[in-house]
Length: 371
Image (spheres, rainbow, N blue to C red):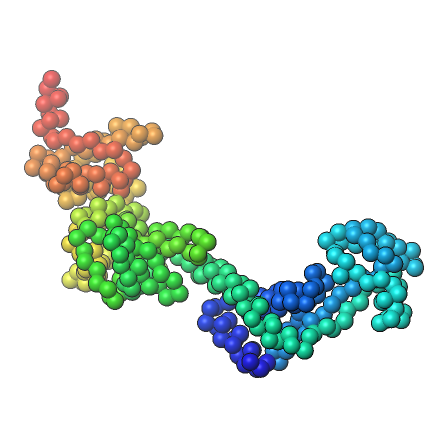
């Protein structure tokens, strides 16, 4: 491979792997230096430099002039200046004064000299020896680049393609990397087809020895939250605010919303004309029901709203300390709606408002008052 082909190959790697070009050049120089040391008996005092324009490389050897071989000791030059040699410097990094003066007649103890020592056949030796070193560096740089790309994707919504599956997981192609979507993190009852595009919530990004581990979910409440934020522009421009999501995946979600503009109805805006906006979200969630809850700073009103579809709910705060307990009083014929099938409605309302909700009918309250 000539110099121009070498440069072209490196540039292709840089572009394909999205790697900082300085990392690649540094890896090449380290690999070539290792190759020279291995094949030509040098230990510490050589460095390979690559011409980034021509692709040519040269090997340089560095010397410190001494009057006798020393290790980690102070030496004094003819001007009285004291210099301490690095204890890591081996004998091949030192040159005796008489030998140095044969090459550099004006050499003095303590001087440093550099000479080019590029072997004629070094290109062939270097190509085979440095390949492993360079490959490893490129893998490390690629891993770091991937981690940087996905570090800010946690808790975000991404669109990927179902590439593979095994007994427990789907593997989703996200472009430069694949995410892991456990089947347990899918919406219960949904069927995903290989090759199809799928929206996923990035629940966690971990840095591992093999690169980023990107864990995905369609089951977590954050998936619903991000769907609303992506599908409804008013959340992005600040007209609407999303205060919370409580979810029983595959069954029901409650989404708490409010408006910063008195003229904008937050629930109507989320639903859209003839249900056009909410339809896209419901389609993504399958058969899951979504209750849009009007947020209110008055916690009693907020809890009453959260118990929808139950109507005419009266709420009293029993405890507002760490336990946060509320009593909801409902008409007799609204009790089943307030509790919901398998108590899902009241559980989700409790999660959404962060209050434990006890519930009684109006009849029960009256009976207790007569006792």
